[in-house]
Image 1 (tube, rainbow, N blue to C red):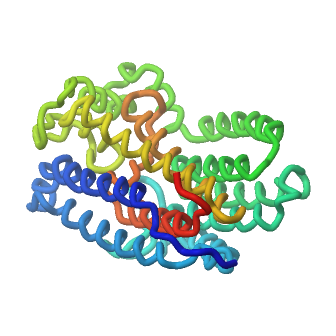
Image 2: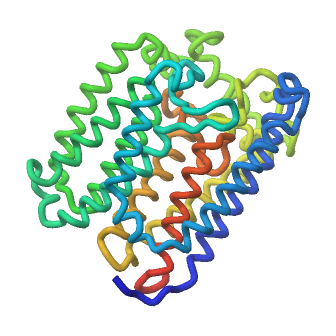
Length: 368
């Protein structure tokens, strides 16, 4: 397909870079005390994050120059590779266990999280699927069902690690993509009912998940156990006030809030930068969402529109769940905050995905 190539969206690119820069500062502030204690180097985590961010940005710029139709041609191969990686990570001796989940492949610093890449792989494949089956997507048996079987298979493999947070984001993202592609609402209502029953079953099957639910309802019922993280997170968010305690002046990072540079980094943002700083971060995420939706609406074809909508949905869901956990709206789950949280696979994956969206904006039919 031919279209006149335009410069990629400068507003989207600028918002991503600003979030990355804020993330680097906050990773240093949140992790310096812990890093000096365990690694004898207060810059240990931020140096690694700088490497991840540099590789990610370079990859994003390169991906932004590759016509997004390239991913449609290789969508099936990409999905197969992601499934193979999900299976390999479950094999003892191949998969690495961290935080109680066998979610990593590799050794030491050279490791990746296959479930993170499955999120993008599934978005690419489903975008191809709905583009090819536009007229069938409103039918359950011939349109929705084949897609759902793939989604639930990937979810099952991720749950074997187990990683409920990543599995939930992947599934939710896929549903957003299918909904924007034209799937009927009544199908989602039925799936929602099945999902609620399945979610209850997952909670009952694992005692630690039930503890997370009870601690979410009343964290003070177990303040030194299941409720510890959310209580310490609220202790960080509350004292931040309007303007915060100041950069580097967080109190909760002094061994109160566990690993504040990852899932709870937004709590440190709120504590040090206050409501104003936290609101600015949310504003930047809002800009990313706005420009992502614009990319979907102005894409020249169904594949590009679905791809942008899927990536947009993934970012939105991760931000919603992460910040919801930090402020006590959702039970604790292991979801990183895009562009800010420390981590190689999650950060690289998100930047790769945004590179694809930036390329879609280069083929936009108009700009707004």
